[in-house]
Length: 470
View 1: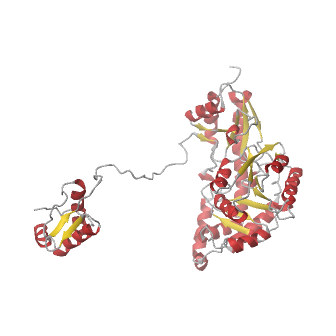
View 2: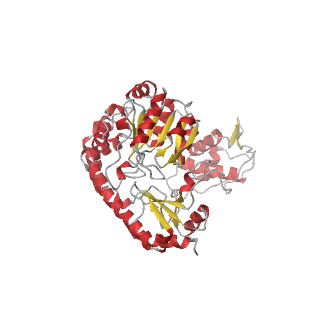
View 3: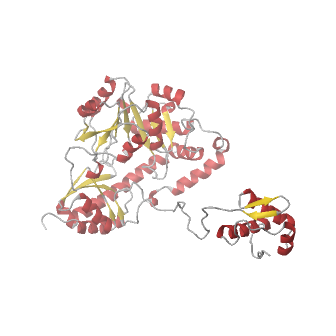
């Protein structure tokens, strides 16, 4: 008679252990189709278990189709077709934990900040205070635009550091700028044409295009986006970063800003999305005033994020809507819940209101200035120094490095990768156009670089480059 061992079954129940044993034998073919199983009474006696144990195991197997029953005759093994044996590897995809990039000695592409610079001690203190003093608020659903306390804190920050006089009601908080882009698409309409900067951050256009929005690249010149080309493009929306363009580092001058505002007011339904993603880290001089602060026609939608100032894993962003768009948003999209948890919102609000955010920004400016200066000094003193030209080093957390080399951009990035250095070239950020694309210009993002890694990284990079005079 069929028999199984019930020793060392751990926390499994008796009937579930029996169920698994019989199922395994059916799937593996030990029990062939139409094989009659022992009666419940005799099987229970042979196994030394109760009748109910066998009855429950049979019932579960029958419910799942492994057994069938014939009245007054008993239980039989079902015929299973196209069955994959248990020792056959599953074809289902398996999720694996993986880092966003290989373990580079130096990564000059990623926006990831140095973990040692995050204010963990202060953040831990605020978390404890939030948990102890915000019981009711933490368990109350957040308004669709975000908690009032965080929106007020953001308003205060924008007033003090960006010269923006806005109402908390105009602020919409969301889990990352990608999510907010999606809301804007729904608010403004999928039929709108969006102009994006060329060169530019390609992820922006991918987000729009994934929602079936037409994107048109518009050239960036020494004074920012070309207003003439923008007019010819037929775009309804211009998505730009005037305070610090990525990747060129260009700051849009005041004259071009007023031209852009003029473009927006020429036709109804035109808007400018001002992406101000790292304006806090202009290392020399005062922050550049925002376009929103000089907009009197309510055509600028301002966007910013805390992922650059605090951590790339902190998915808290916000946008400031013109008042007339706020009304449309409330009427048509307020059914969406805020995608940032109350816990994070109250913690961040306290961090800003108590002055910790300002102190953090000031400390990080000093830190990043030190990293940048060490990086620039090392480059100038290395063999690479006489083959390169540095530009836009004051604009933010990246600069441009033009090198004289016989290698193509693709060959250069590949050789650096093999040496454990991750770099990107300006040419990678251009869209397919007939314009000439500059070559051999490296985009150096140093937000995640440690000073200790700089000497070796630059030495290895210098070894990768083949100067023209060799």
